[in-house]
Image (cartoon, rainbow, N blue to C red):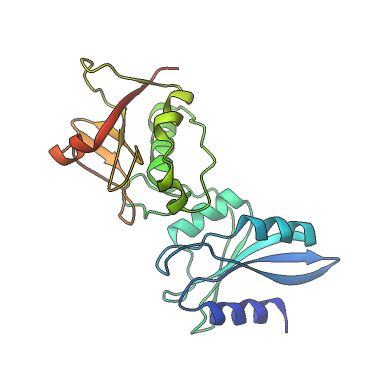
Length: 233
C-alpha cells in the first residue's frame, strides 16, 4: 500500500467524522501518519491532536497535511485554504466514499471579512478582530495560544484578561463607543467568551457555527456585553 491507500483506509475508518493525518518523509520514503481528530462533533472541522503532531515530527519530516471530506467533494474549503496558509504546508483532501482526491498549497489566500465560516482557531471571533484591525487600521494584533478545543476555552474564557495585555483599555461607563471599539460579551456561557467590533451603531462579529456578519447592536447583545475596550497603543 502507498501512502494514499493508507490515508484513504483511515478516512473510511473514521467516516462520518473527518480523518486527519500527516505525510512524512522518513529516510526518503513517504509515509502516512494517522492522527487523532479532537473535534467533539462530526460537523466541525478537524482538530489535529498536537501530541500526535509532535510524535510525527520526531519520526520524520512533515511534508503535508492530509484530511478527509466525508460529505462534501474534496475541494478545499475556505477554512482549508486559511489553515493551509497558516501551516505553510501542502494539503491533501480525500472523500472516503468517492475516493477522489483534492489538493491545495500556500498561495497567499486571505479570507473575506464578511461571510466566512466559523472554525475554531482559524476563523473565529478573535480571528475576525485581528483581520479587521490589520485590514482597516494597519494594526497587527498579537494572537493568543488557544486551548486545543473550543470546549476547553469555554471553561475559562480569556478575553477579559487578554484584551488589556494587547493594547486595549477598558472604557469608562460615561465614554461613548466609536467605530473600532471591541465589545467583550458573554454568549450562552460563563465569562466573557465572545468579542465583537462596534461599527456605525452595529456590530461586526462571528458567532459559533454561523457566518461572520454585521448586525444591529440589539438590546440582547447589549445585555451580553460585559466590557467595552478601545485600542490605545
